[in-house]
Length: 325
Image 1 (tube, rainbow, N blue to C red):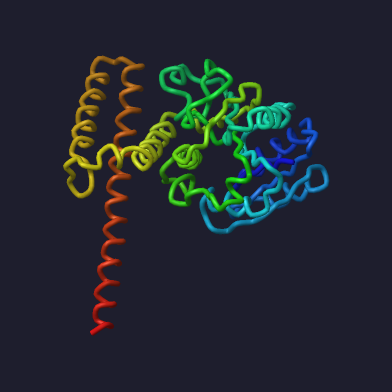
Image 2: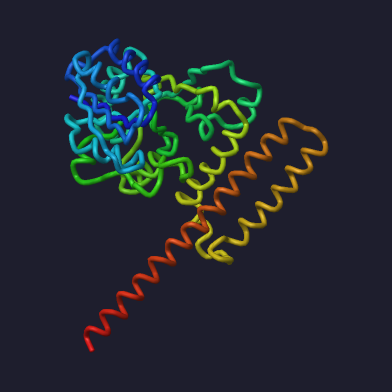
């Protein structure tokens, strides 16, 4: 048996369509269960879930604490079977999705993490600029050239992944300090999880035949949305990689000076591309500039948070010393 787990918030319309596609799924022979965690929706999401309660092997929960990872962690408490399939509330599965994941998990017992293909489902025809930057960071789409077989854990994407349940039963959970929570956050919650698992020796396998379509909404095709996405991506990159990369670097208020110089240099590239009206160059330059902005933001956030933690620790030590006297 396996459990499909997803979190949702205020996406009743697309959630209804996604759950309708679940009704057409080929069930794996060992059976399956669907767990949907409502992360504090204010629309008619509860009504949508109730409408499918008799059509799907559905367990619905409500987690009012904000944050996708808080919702997923709540769902893991009721996961059953030997495999947890993680996806999103805007990912439409192919009919044989679960069968393909189940088959690979059974055939590759030495692997603990499984990633599937994520292809686009455009609400509107995409503009030309979607070909100018990587589709992974922007739209969470996998590379079409990625071959089936062993994969880099960082190529496992949240809309289509599976993890052996024994890992979660042993106590592993998502890190609530990263991932979707409000409009401003550090991206990369699933990446953080799989990298953490990889550091403990767990290996990832790419199931190219297990496919979901990730719904790309029309508002995501606006450049303002893309720049905000770049900032969130940059924040996640710094939290996952940058703070280790810049560990010994000179810093000002917690921000590595090398990162500041890179950002200033990139701003010059943006200005240069603007002057010469090179649309593709300008788009790429603005993406990188906003990524650097996100890295600086996260570096500062971490420095402030660590400072607060340090202040509390010093206060606790002082209090304990006073009590001893």
